Image 1 (cartoon, rainbow, N blue to C red):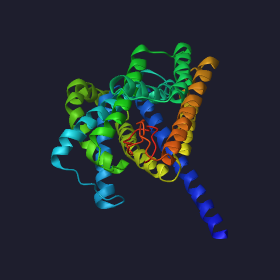
Image 2 (image 1 turned 30 degrees about the vertical axis):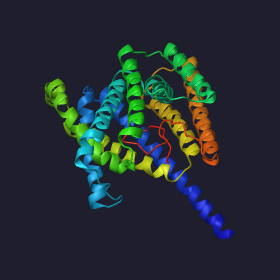
Image 3 (image 1 turned 60 degrees about the vertical axis):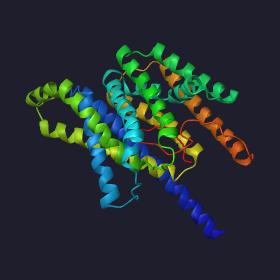
Image 4 (image 1 turned 60 degrees about the horizontal axis):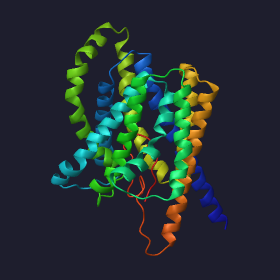
Length: 342
């Protein structure tokens, strides 16, 4: 009994430390990206995203081939183009739009909009793939949608372009999650292998548009900015931390339960909102804060409902499981998508 208690205590401590490091990496990446766009006046989201992909590609290669933290999952050459390339394209859109939205709207507003992802995933599966969901799933989306509407209406720093970028980013995240269930069927990817295969494709997709659309502006910025070295350190550091964030997500998933991961993810949004407000001092009205809170409560309720349904289906023989976002495999590249392990 004593050994069991010690093991349980160590497990709890490991889960807490995993969640804390996940929060730390996530909030730091968000704040650094916002700092790059706002304080450094580096208004080139395509270039920042490309730096993230390059750093992530290098980090994944080192993790697999040098440090050997995870075994390499072999993928056939044909599947790389037919399965992984489409995923990489959506993955690329997701990251770019996240950075675009960070340039135009406050972190608090962007993080709240990202919480809309469960709703867009369910709606897309219902409209496009004709998936059927229980009434409890639909009911859990009501506070999410209501909270987003209240937050948007009362947002004091509202920007149409930034809002649209964040919303389309939610759709890209949902599409990526849904495609993962079909395109990557049969490959048990963890987050490191996901980045290993997808980040190089994403770099290839984004490199040319970044050079054509932002190359001249980046060169001009380097000539006119006062302290180039410190700015480069921040930009490259953001890319390195983006890879560390992905690795921390992998670790926290394997250290906690699905419900804990969902709740911790929503609390992480609250932490990011609070820290960003302390640093950037963007105005937040009382109704805006209430809307954000309602959205986070709705996301927690949504995760709880999914957990109850999955438990019931697990103990019911012969039940056909209804697909829901993230239940087929672990797909957590670079960004903090709230998904649960198989």
